[in-house]
Image (cartoon, rainbow, N blue to C red; front, side, top):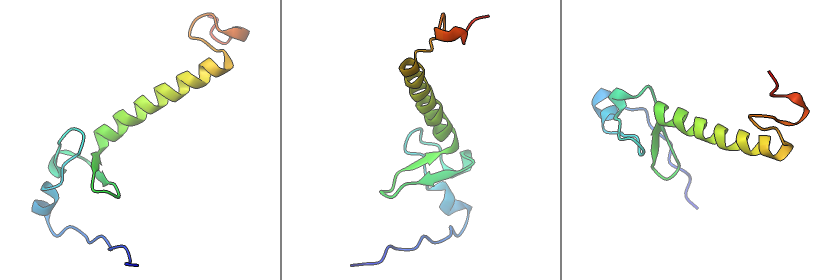
Amino acid sequence: MQAASQPRPLADAAEWRQYRCSFCGRDGDHARFLASGAFGGTICDRCCLQALAIFLRAHLGAARRMIGIGRRGGRGGHDAA
């Protein structure tokens, strides 16, 4: 079994520019960070935050529905003004 290859630091800015977000296409010069996955995909800071917002909306909405709290007229007066 082969050991996993160790990542090496990028030599210079020109090398950083060659990496792009797999979702929006921003290069290293136009992103605060690019996180890379195990299979070669990368995601920039903006797409990461956008994905987090989508995830939270979906899962918080599901949790609210499970416990019966709606945006209007929820049980127990949680949403009463």
